[in-house]
Length: 103
Image (cartoon, rainbow, N blue to C red; front, side):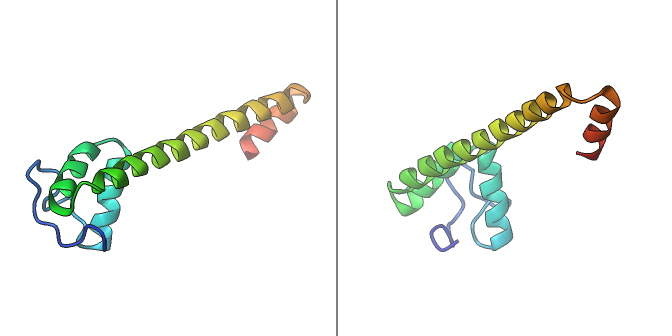
C-alpha cells in the first residue's frame, strides 16, 4: 500500500475503482487478481507511468516468485498423492479404502 497508494486511474485501465491500492482489502484483491495472470502486465504499465520504471522490477519479481511458489505447491500435492498410493499398495483393499476416507 505504501508503494502504490494514492495512485490515480491508470491510462491502461487496470487501476480504477475496483482495482487499486488505496485500502488493504482492495490491495489484497488486486494482488490476488494479478496472481492469476489477469492483466498483471497492465497493472505494471499503469504503475510504471505513475511511479517510474523500477515498478517493472517489482511486478516481474512478483510474478516469478508467485509462479515458483504455486509450482512448488502443485508438485508437493502430486508427490503426496503418489506417496499415499505407494503406501496403499502394501495394504489390503479394506485398509486402503479406510485410509483414503480418513485422509
